Image (cartoon, rainbow, N blue to C red; front, side, top):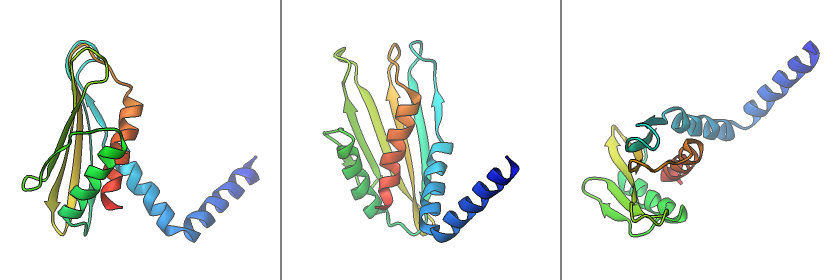
Length: 146
């Protein structure tokens, strides 16, 4: 068993060493996922699903353009863009209750790059799968640097 584990570790080092861009992509994505937090109590209070990521050397206008395209790709529409504030906001209603959920994404200048924050807000009485929300938010955020 020890030799199998050691061989697996050596193979992993070889793969990561041979593919630094792939390894960096996985690390960057995990940063978004690691920053994910949920605020509120399901079905009792409003809930906010939040995460963020820094992109060194990414111009804010590029991030905003890419984020809007990613939000559209995730099925959001009627996206409000405030370029001066670096904010994108959209509302969707999927439950048939007439009670919308809001997605707000901001791209703010941070040194020579851009910090992207996202929050998905649902109302009291509504619920969402946090694993699905985390995955979707990180797909949007990670698209800022495409």
